Length: 321
Image 1 (tube, rainbow, N blue to C red):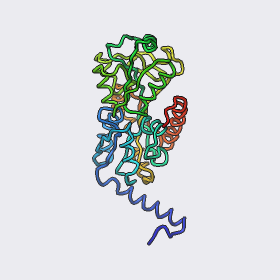
Image 2 (image 1 turned 180 degrees about the vertical axis):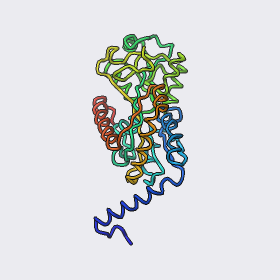
Image 3 (image 1 turned 180 degrees about the horizontal axis):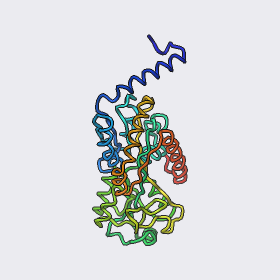
Image 4 (image 1 turned 90 degrees about the vertical axis):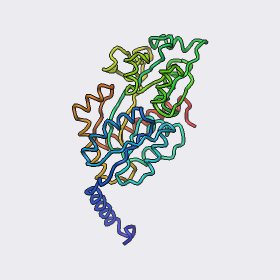
């Protein structure tokens, strides 16, 4: 029987029945969770923290597959074009979902090609400099950056990522001259800032906190509206003189569009339970991340609002290609 020849009402009923049958037997094999950045980045850290509990809840292995490159585009494209059968998921972030598609023509639509599952974390970025940089505050750094002698480069996890946009917004707000140096992920970017090959970066706090505490990096400010509990002595960029400056990185799980609603609902419910576990919340909080949660619909609305916010910044900065 060709389902396409059925009347619309019967077709919808058939699709619903197929989805229920698939959801009843799902999962029957390991699940791939794509992290579209290189190992060591914030998205990868979140994926690997959730994977053990999610594997236990679903009774199948969760294989975290790092597919870095292109500022998250490569891994996102793989996920977008995967079969919507509940065996491939991807970590979405402000970088690969909200920002990069606004700058470049990417081979996926961040809204049409994905189904939102759940918002997992919100984290600040930290304006970090190499200890050799002659600035111990945002005010001193701005003075340095405005000087004729300044030759400042800032690292990001890739062109069109949130760490790139954080730097561009800082340039627009402060008048500082800096050159952008994109990497294939946050892990590689932080290595070169620590080594002194690049003077600074707007680095995800999940990646930066341990390096700051060991004094391999100097934190000048966090990019969120409020200070981070794990870096209470580090001011915000806004309170340091750039009123209105605010940047947050978020992560969340997405599935290829047309993944059965019952599977989306099951994944949402299981991850929401995990995010409520005291031990998981403590582990996130220890790294400066705020756990997310909520419905797929809420996460979808959040993504659309974030894209609208960054579209204005990209336009004003003239970054769209």
